[in-house]
Length: 450
Image 1 (cartoon, rainbow, N blue to C red):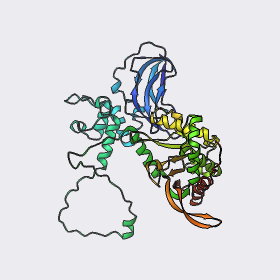
Image 2 (cartoon, rainbow, N blue to C red):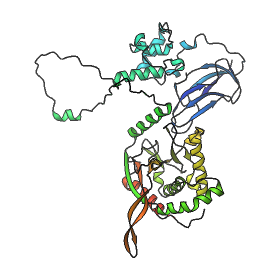
Image 3 (tube, one colour):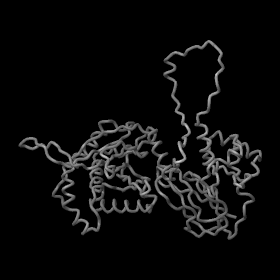
Image 4 (cartoon, rainbow, N blue to C red):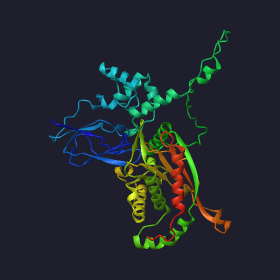
């Protein structure tokens, strides 16, 4: 009986794992070629996993809510049979793939348990709550009693406790500050360590368990995408040496030009002319002039990107964030840029982006000005080395220089906040790049035809 291993496909250079959200096929169900077997989610987009061959689903190797690494086998499919032999007890089979994501210490303990056939029994508590053997084995290895296991909130089907649930519980338990036993009142001689050694001792941050002050407090579970974004942002701060440069640009010419052309443009093209495509066109030109801003860092190797693919951070209605990517942005004219921006923004809000439309970005732009923010310190999207935040356009008094002398006038101005990775981008490059963006914006041709 031939077997086919359905693996998690590669979804871009920066995506290493995904979460199983929904199984669309059940064990024993026939699968046609190109049928969708399950839905998955990454920190960037939700998508579907199809099967390339015909067969029968024999075994699911991951439950809903579990995390799968790219290249791991998700399911086993029989390719030459219309029936499937039901596994003797699929819940008691702990595959190597299912425990790869567990920490090394826990993994060794589980392997020892499995090797001696000491799989926990029974797998339900007195109230009938089900626990898989994998969860019970982890609990046994960590000394967690059934009564304590019952207190863990499950995120699986039917509120079942999954592998990730118990591992997160163990992690949070380890970080909780434990009470210190009272010290006996005994006088002893104590040798004081030199101050230098004390100062050189690394400081370990410990997390305290959050307490709910009153019964009126509301506990809100982070969304799945929110959790992934949180992890991505923390990893970026731990990876890159973030530094910022700020500069103010006069965009009066751009403001007046857009006011002049936006109505006719919408009538002719059926698209709105917002400020975003204008700014992206300018940034693409600057990236072309400063190619060392269009790079990524892999260890001690700098990868200089041939394509200029600009990520456009977009806020979703539920507050989450997604970054669709405009591929080869330097090759688009302003009409093409406007159509691409509007299309990606619309489909972002409708959760209709394709996986490849949020991959392979080489630089990111975020328009924080749409929320009234004038400047910020954006976090770099790994493995890129720069991100530019566009502040709100404000009407402000400014000094205007003319051949006849200087005078005060009302101008449209905005702040550009440039965050870059100081491991590979020094202050000169980071500053010159954002300075060039300012120059292009301020020298916009008010007579430009579109």
